[in-house]
Amino acid sequence: MSLKHTVVRPSDAPGMTVAIDPGTYYAGVAVFFHKKLVHGSKVTVEKRRNMCDQALALSKAVLVDIMPTLDKEPMPSPSSLAACSLLCEGQEHRKAKNQKGDQNTLIHLAVNTGCLLAYLSPRLGAHGATGDVVPPSTWKGTLAKDIKLNQIKRTLTDEERALTRNNEHVLDAAGIGLWWLQRLP
Image (cartoon, rainbow, N blue to C red):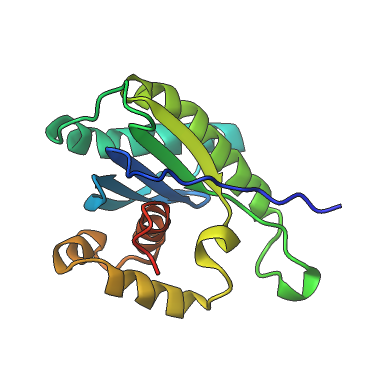
């Protein structure tokens, strides 16, 4: 039996979109306001003793990272439908022949993804935040990583591209946001 996750994108762009590409000790972060990338960063935290402490530390660090952007941008009304979308790239199990790296890392990434959504959603809730997990195959399709990264770079404006500092994790977060906002071909 195969379970397929379906993500329903809004027909109109939400006022704010926060897209996150979680790693084990880092997260690529992209914040969009009305379809425009206004913040991109890679947030890194020190290794903790256990996965839960690590996930909470990363979630707190992401919130601290995006707060200055949220404070300076005009916030959408909480009453507007999907005023804020919070998106985290999810993990997918691959067939043995397509697996890369240590598969136990998927557990760590899943814990980080869950904690990021659980920690950030209520803190952005005053802005009508809705959270979702976006599997890589949903937003990337089957394109090779380098081809997808080049597609993301071509889609971003020069100003937006500068915000990514050409960091692979920030570009992935931006790609999730671009896909969600229907800007990515």
